[in-house]
Length: 527
Image (cartoon, rainbow, N blue to C red):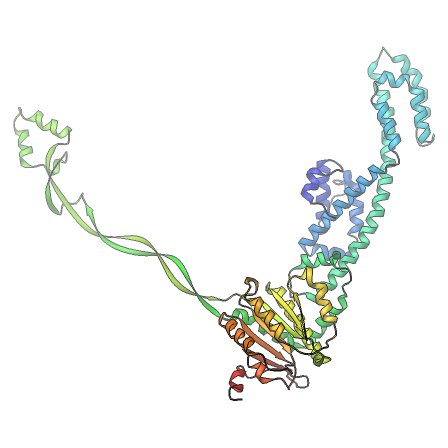
């Protein structure tokens, strides 16, 4: 249960808008460890006290403040807690009848209240003892106030308002104490669950970090999406992975392979080019090209100048000048000019290929019992962490005589099943064909296109059928890659020849993981 802080400020059912805003602000300041002025938040003090108690656990506060997504979630949950408690109190308010009685008297005029004063004081005496309410003081003043009716209405109104305000204040104090008691109870349960969730989160983060930044999803998991998770299983394989550095290095090597290749892509680019051309300069006199009409006096024909020689033709000259119809020489000059031009060009660009999905096939047959089983499970766990870190899709296929599948990168939905896999016992016979067929089927889907396939097995098995080998060759042409981790010195070399890369995990050797002949097909070509 949570409540968005912005929605709480605008539409919350407790306090007014400004105090709701201050309440959200106070929670955020406490999470960030900022200094707060108690006097500034005095109007929301009943709630700030509960907030201080929630954040009194230093370990819990460190986890909350260290992750923005968790801080937002906890803020929302605290606000929802306060609003839920307030709503529940209103429904079960033990002072509801007293509220109705006070509301009834408050709706009357001062004169009516004064007239019914004995009844009003009787209502108050039902719920308050003499020491709680100064009833004697008000009883003595009733007679004086009755004499003032008709003479000083303002004085009467002030007296009645004072009495009702006193009653209202006492009622609010009682309700606040009762509501705080309810909040305290709810807060204690909230803290218990919150601290348990934080402890689960820390353990889960410890098992999966620092290989994943998906901490928000881990927090959701810790909140109870799965109830029976045995975090000790994750921790067991995380600790074993630290000791078995060779497995971690192999997992990292496989993780890098998907992005090691480079590919050429056509990319359209706009490039600037400089073009030269002849540009006409009309103001320059370089070449005579003709005659035209204008008012350019510097280029007049002699016949037009002759019009100025006679007074009788002089007006005709000025008329042609005004109309720009004087006959003038036309000159033209050309210069070599440059201009920029934009051209679209397609060029091949070398790009590092993005890391593709990972498919893991794990042999869970009886021959893998013992140390090989531990190695296989640890490798699968290591690949999961890399898939989370690199945001790569990861698909697990376990096989013996049948297969089981699991999408490892979908942590929320698969964590329980992953732990089931890590905790299962290996038994049964070995039939890799269904697992390889499933992997090849996935490679044809868009989600697992260009995938790296890793088969972990002792490879003590029969040769692969010809049609499976053919499908592997076709998938390889579609840029899928095939790798094996061999956990036995007695592996079938014919089967290994179908893979691009083969590694041997030597259970007794000092170097543990060694690369076999890269292309086993060369070894088996003559056999």
